[in-house]
Length: 505
Ligand SMILES: CC(=O)N[C@H]1[C@@H](OP(=O)(O)OP(=O)(O)OC[C@H]2O[C@@H](n3ccc(=O)[nH]c3=O)[C@H](O)[C@@H]2O)O[C@H](CO)[C@@H](O)[C@@H]1O[C@H](C)C(=O)N[C@@H](C)C(=O)N[C@H](CCC(=O)O)C(=O)O
Ligand SMILES: Nc1ncnc2c1ncn2[C@@H]1O[C@H](COP(=O)(O)OP(=O)(O)OP(=O)(O)O)[C@@H](O)[C@H]1O
Ligand SMILES: N[C@H](CCC[C@H](N)C(=O)O)C(=O)O
Ligand SMILES: [Mg+2]
Image 1 (cartoon, protein in one colour):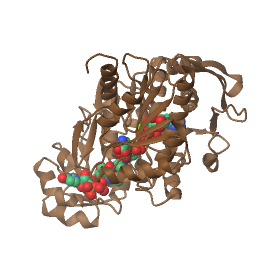
Image 2 (cartoon, rainbow, N blue to C red; image 1 turned 90 degrees about the vertical axis):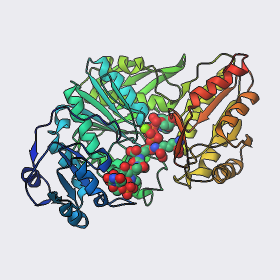
Image 3 (cartoon, rainbow, N blue to C red; image 1 turned 135 degrees about the vertical axis):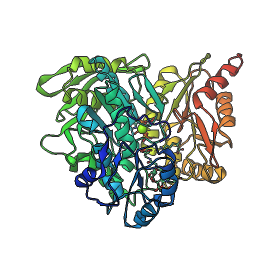
Image 4 (cartoon, protein in one colour; image 1 turned 30 degrees about the vertical axis):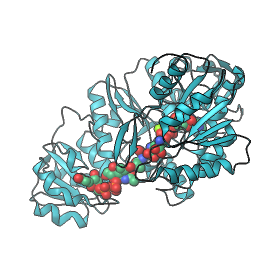
């Protein structure tokens, strides 16, 4: 991952020693390694280069370049062995190098997760939001925090924009070692299904693992729904001391054990934690959280929508499981000012409310629009929703996303997200077909080009209306044919609203 923090000091580790810790066999001379990477482009002198078989290439193709950059050894499979020896480097051969990457990286960096309080959050939607709320609670408890997720990696004051939701095992262990060096004591991280499927979190121990919900996603990567479920379930195969699962999500029931901590935003008192007296407050909500042993705390979250009560309750239950005082945890969660690009209000004059949200899957669109409907009703206005779908990603979700938008909004503008290498008109047609087939009375308009669609949404909006730009959230670029063009929904919408209110964008 470009710009990934690495620890400053690493005690050299002998390959002969490393070989005893892994299911891997050493060929060639012994050497000392002081780092590890899976990318020849990010090799630092002293690194072990993990040459992995990928979907497109085999990392062994890049061994010579890695050696030139200072790699002193290679970890690979049988297919990569010869290339490594030909480059004059000692080689550790493993049957499945990706599966042992976490253990190798943990060994090289001194098992950093053992020195940190780790909280991991998985689920189809809500990982980023919950992680920010957890981080805010950890801070309220006086801990120096780290956060790893979709938007950014933050270690104390150091902030690096994220490329992945969950970094590769090599990068992840380096980040954790760098965190420990910076006196970080607690880390909350998002754990994606990709990460669990390909072992990015192998070698990590979590104090708490949380599971938000399970919906349709990533069927471009996972072979089917069962495969996706099995990937997420791996977080609960014994890596977490405490497991916190959503009681309101029937799909999660097979994972429940006697010691499971459950939570119900719907207020089911059979759960370990449940919410009552949910009520709106400014741009957020307040509620009473009930927990084990008669715990009752006044809680709040600066985000609208019932799904954010669930995220806040999960954060609270996770923090308390990690040993934090419930009142302190609740105060920290309520103090979180918001989450970048998640139901984020745009700062602009005028009587139209502009909101940007990262909903790019069906359940998220349903949840986001339900929250915005409540806000629009209170303002006496309509919900105007702008929606697209990403190119080179799960095609099956496109019509469903369109249908969810049509059911939740009064006016839907179907436009472009990140087309990547696809024809944007083809993606729009799929989203639009779903919207038009939803049997809703919402008006559907197709507008090519996201900027043009934002202008059109603002032009069509009236007093009290809520404009929701869905799908891109915190993203600062739009990917078209391999090129990332600058594009931030928040800036675009603020500019368009300002211009409409008579100012200048
Ligand atoms: C599907 C998937 O996860 N693929 C991962 C996989 O890529 P790949 O198999 O295509 O790799 P490849 O391009 O064939 O290359 C093979 C190997 O050669 C290496 N290489 C390649 C070129 C070079 O010059 N030098 C070099 O060393 C590569 O680092 C790689 O290890 O191995 C790579 C590193 O080993 C990962 O970076 C890559 O993540 C890709 C880029 C990706 O897009 N992943 C996304 C889908 C992802 O992980 N998303 C999740 C979930 C997001 C969400 O919840 O929405 C996330 O956690 O972000
Ligand atoms: N608990 C939830 N249930 C359903 N939808 C949610 C929930 N929390 C957030 N959302 C919706 O999903 C969108 C993404 O939320 P968030 O970024 O917190 O989730 P995520 O799991 O990290 O997603 P991603 O995998 O895309 O990074 C939000 O913008 C919101 O629309
Ligand atoms: N991590 C997700 C984000 C998708 C966001 C959406 N804007 C899109 O381009 O589909 C992915 O890369 O699939
Ligand atoms: Mg996320």
